[in-house]
Length: 440
Image (tube, rainbow, N blue to C red; front, side, top):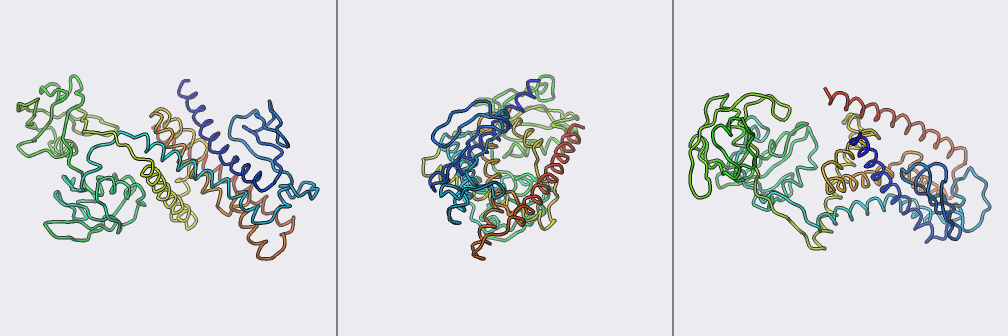
């Protein structure tokens, strides 16, 4: 019951904020252009309370999801007086600015939230600000197949220079599954070019290898092999079977490859060295059957803050890269190169917002910013009923130097409504199917 309430509350907040910001953009620019706004509503449906200021009825409506703005004379179907403060009485460039203001405010919200999070600071592993030196390449991963080795240093990814692991992570976030990533690496004192094939489900480490991180034990599960061998929280594993340990991933891989055979560990406990032998056990770990010893590691982390200018630049950069990824997905959908199941509908958004709310404020704000950016971009698509279609219509009318007929606009609107309803039904079906399959 609690989870359901959190889910409902989180989706109401997310959609409420991003839609209100969108409509506020239309409202502000409409007022600046001299358009009379009859209604500014928080929520949808019947009016339950409100106050009138000037010509505008600021109201709260029954359904607390988003809101809307009703401008005088905006609907060509309704009777118009021809008054100068009506939407359709304004010049086309003014109408275009009013329409564009909604999606623009969604983009601004996404940048503001991202910049504020960067300004406030966040916890991150220390290795992110270090040189992208690969300490371990797990055999049989895409990185290994491509020819990456332990000791290599990444120089560029997809033609873009990378100076830290943070740069590498930025590039990985926007990698398209199924593509080949050109790399330049420094290997054995010389620079060479490689290409890594990506597949759905690949992690960053599958493609680029692992950075060097000390293997510090955070928790030890009681009754598991590590506890029986004498491992303790705070221990630092420095060697396995006599070989240096440079990454927690190497510990996991060596444990898996042992197939249950004893593993000799060299542990630093304070300033003294302790030899231990652990016997891995087989069972389900994080949903997968594998060999494990029953520990969690805690690589060194730091709180990274940004100055105002840096936070804004990084916030803009993040949203530019994310916009490129969203546009790329839209193009792939149009070209039938990506399945429609990649899209998320109302049910999927509700589930994702609930999950983000459970993960904490930063995760929730990050999700809200993503949805805001996504809404802003989608609204610019040339689909009847969306803002993008109205911009296209204004462009066509400006070229023809006359308005399109009311019959053409009505037919386009009908097609747009039917298309969006069918799309919502399809993505909702995909959401439910994803949830059902994920629960088995």
